[in-house]
Image (cartoon, rainbow, N blue to C red; front, side):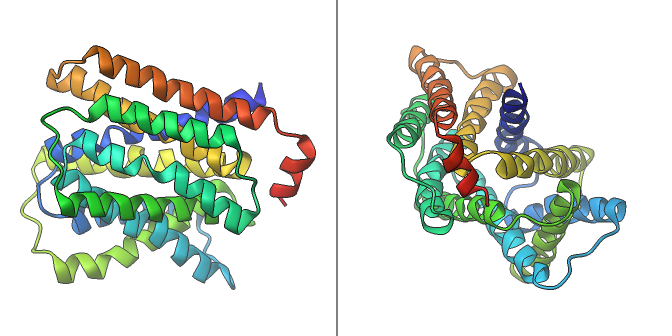
Length: 293
């Protein structure tokens, strides 16, 4: 039961992240990826920091800066670039390569075994995402593609290092540190590299509040909790739920149609998640204990 709870709570995060694409395109001003990423991270991080009232100590300052950069500064900047330059589904399928990168990095940094079912689950998930979103109308902007691939590498590295560097503090504190660090690192880049943000409308403010409080603070607490309790390749595969949510929201909120191929894609995504969990449950307890040390 505890295992199922861990999976369910962790899965909530990418399911909610799937709404990032529609919120970005429908609620936020276009052309400000660095500023929007900063406004998503920094206010939420500072709010959590006020709640926990605890700062990093010693080597954790550097670790938090690295994790904040990988999980938030670099990843979110590139995510918004991809979201602005590509249709939401195309951005999602490019980012879907992340589980493959996680498998390789987990092997290099954590000594995790590369298992056949993990590869099959990643292939099935990426194929499912492709069926979900690669329609004839899907434009392939080169800059957007590069941004999406680089963003996938950044988040994969952040996922694996978050597992490797488990802090001696609560998940709330760990999330506060990373969000604040990510926002602080984005601040000078947003000021220097982008024009001043226009006056925000009520819709813009609502979109930013949603992305910061729900799409960042709450979901990343659940995500880091999952990273601490589950194998990185399992957590990464749950990320396939994000593009599936994006497609469902496009159908529900924007009136987009769903083809039989897209329904097949959903089944493949859910099947890949099931395969990754099956692989994880079948592993010997001793092997798991070695990886979590």
